[in-house]
Image 1 (cartoon, one colour):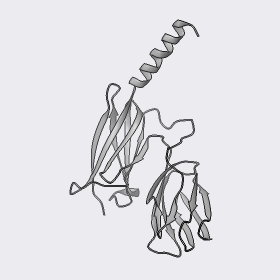
Image 2: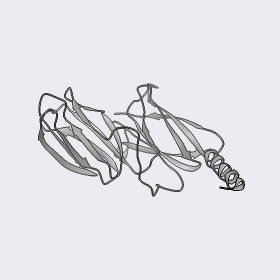
Image 3: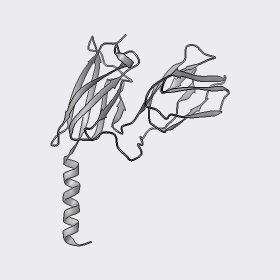
Image 4: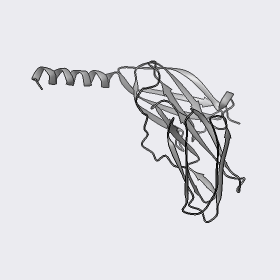
Amino acid sequence: MSRFALIACASACTAAQAQAATVSVHVVDAGGQPVSDAVVTIRPPAGPPTQPIRFAWRMAMVQKDITFNPHVLIVPVGATVAFPNQDKVRHHVYSFSKPARFELKLFGRDETRSYTFTRPGAVALGCNIHDTMSGFIKVVDTPFAGKTDAAGNVSIPSVTAGAATLTVWHPRLKAKDNEASFALPVSAIGDVSRQLRLSLR
């Protein structure tokens, strides 16, 4: 590669980095207390990407101690999610949610079932054997997604600059489909911080 081409490539990379920002979001409830497990997604003005979406975390919803772990899991459209059973009892996982209606019939300890999620949206999970078990899978069509930690914080890196839309979802949010959307101007010259106050059931 010529010296000119190297300089041009470096300049293009620097420009691309300057056109993206880290978006940090702090989510609290009406009383100002942090909200965990709120799913934050960002859609840049260019719309969803054409390339496959991949996240760093494992595409698995584990049954352990008669609970779903994690309680909320974010997966991209098209992801196949594993449902390993690490309990000594059998489970029967199901969902009646519109984006994915399915049943994973009785399976025991150290057995795994799986399901492929083809439509975006929130999927509520239950167990036909244990009524107290509940979990959620949020299927998304954007790579800019994350969920809040115990302190109500989430940071989403490399968000394309421009007039984006930020959406927050939580299973107890008082809103249609448990989610709300906000305009989010993303700067090309600096990171963005936003605080969201949610009204929860």
